Amino acid sequence: MPMKYVIDTHALIWFLEGNQRLGTQAQAILSNVTSQLVLPAIALSERKITDFALHQEAAEWFAKERARLIPISLTPSYADGQIAAIAKVNNLILVTRNVADYANFQDLQIENWFS
Image (cartoon, rainbow, N blue to C red; front, top):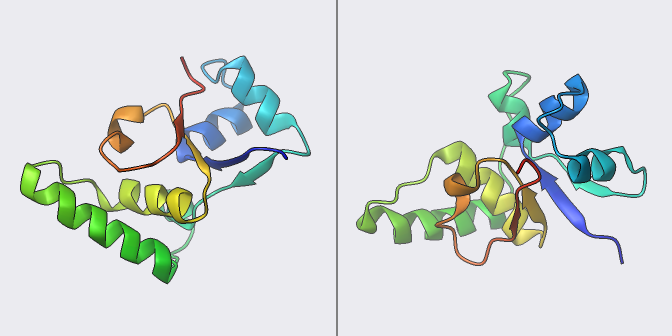
């Protein structure tokens, strides 16, 4: 069964630009027509393309994670939280170069294709 990946804004932009900072593994996966890729709506809205609603299950997961993290001074950004939530509730691997932005979320699968 092929792996499923959530792609963050950096990965998508660098792939589309042909930026060499994107690792060879990332280039291979993003170029493979059989790869199962998800681009969260929030990644599009970060680029001012449009505004999208967040799926209810993902929103609830993020609310619980945010409530858990705020008291211990680890408040995540809304954009990162939404991306993490989409990955988590859909059992997807989050691909990012900003691993530290997602490190405090529980049970989130993360891959850094940029190192």
